Length: 157
Image (cartoon, rainbow, N blue to C red; front, side, top):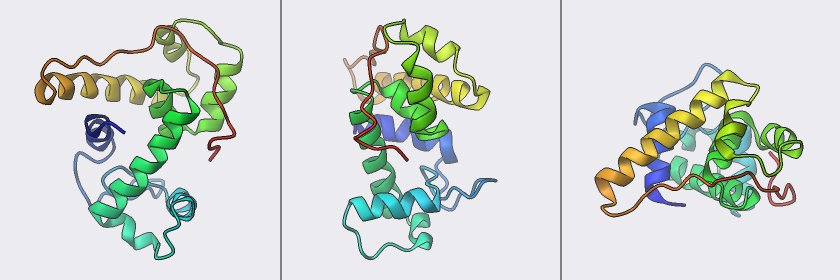
């Protein structure tokens, strides 16, 4: 996962606060839900996982990055969809995507049923573009032109 994308998620999720706790119970820099953290840690073969470790920056970023990487795999590298899945659940993005194959990605984002997820994607894409401009001279954040099929067998939680 591009470190600048993780940085963008971190900015959107916690404003870089390692001890952030959301109103729904997500923890740490990249706001990992305890149940998601446990499932991802198991996929990573991390037998030492404990929920309180999600407040440790290294563990939080490691688990959040692994999860986002799996979401990127599921959504064929379409980072706005992976980011949307990170926020609103891959099952929701996958369900909305089924009837929207091949439409312009920006149009798909505008039609997302959850205001929070739609705005979250827009925010992270904006941060990602800014960070690429600041810290990745010459790199450009390319938003894919159209939606493509996802592969729910990669990860679906």
